[in-house]
Image 1: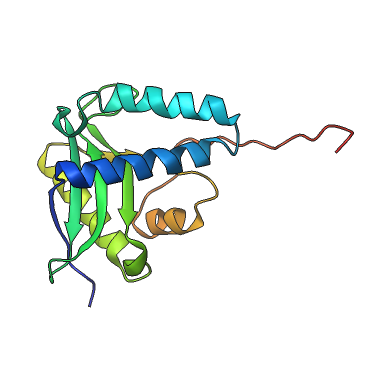
Image 2: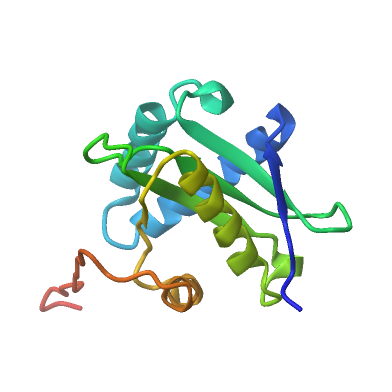
Length: 163
């Protein structure tokens, strides 16, 4: 039987921990294709742009996922508008996480499904997201859940002749 989750609003103490972890991991991912200092600045700018008021940012849900036993199994950051166009026809999944102790147990799909339902209830007709190309587990989850590639960027690290 697939697990069931309930989404609830993130508390401030949970947001503080989540925010620190999310930014650190975002910088690490960005730093695979850009200098570290540039990655830190982009992460800082993106946070200021998309969550200028933290938990109180209008049009954004920062939620904790709990299983039927009341255990926190993950979290999700859902925006109710496309960050590129501002259209509310497409909501945006900024981040989805499953706690390490609960991975590979179906909670990713359950959290994703709950986020999709919330977006649908808010009037969105589509749910968009970005995923880093080296995140095979997330890509597999999205493909199993019916997501399709709509844009794609590729890069290759070039080495100097001295390397």
